[in-house]
Image 1 (cartoon, helix red, strand yellow):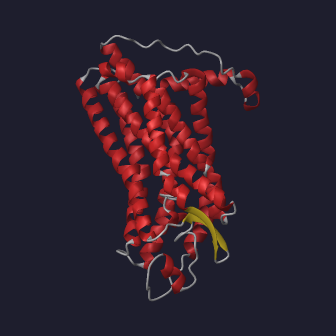
Image 2 (cartoon, one colour):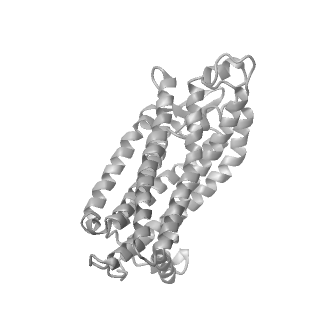
Image 3 (cartoon, rainbow, N blue to C red):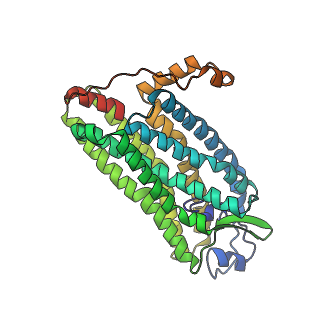
Length: 368
């Protein structure tokens, strides 16, 4: 897997193996150290703190994104490009979340699910990881078209184009995640069973390339596109006289700040891991601190999948209205299936079709 399981050092490497001898440690992490550099403390820390944290991420990520899917299917009916992107983002987060129970057990004990599940879960995790980032990027482009090119957006932001671009995003995510499916394997060493990539040939080169892939595809490209889109959106909103402008700008900053806060630390640590793999950094104390940092920043990145429903839905007036309507219809989790008619058509506001300021108002309200 790439990254956090995307970067196997966190799951089984330097953060999950207790190096009892200089030779064991040097074979995996740093070569020719003058004294043993035990990573037992890092592993114990992970066993103690990561399972409860990941369990909370799993619980809130599952409930939040299922709520998003429910609202979209019951009320929105996937009738626009934005609806399609939001739905796919929720599916991406759910795919990511469904892999967490396996990693929870893994960090608490060891891998007991065999090689086949090692490949499947690693692949599922990484596809969810990439597709989630890509759909956040795609939603930024959707907002850019809706606000900066409002008239053109009436033709471009269609359900058909939404489906086509979504399929393209899933294709890229599936292809980018193939190394996890091909190279992930389960093996036993020092009475512990691990699940990680077993690269052919020069494993250091593969590890470096994997980390670079995460940094480039998972941060640099999406971040560059998002910065461009939101910069143009802010410029456009400042030029137009619109009562919703301040609220829209605040929402934009929330999206950007949350993305930066939750993902940049993780990618910085991954970059430092590259330097360790290339033996540019060979300090034992720094290596251990980096392992702790990788655990912390990866957990922070995991939390982002729980926040997507909040960012893209719960801050919106329409979604709050849908949620209230949903709970009026479904007055308890045990009566959900009996009372919720998924074939019920929810009558929403009819969007304006004029190419005037009212079009801009509508686009800002829906897109943000």
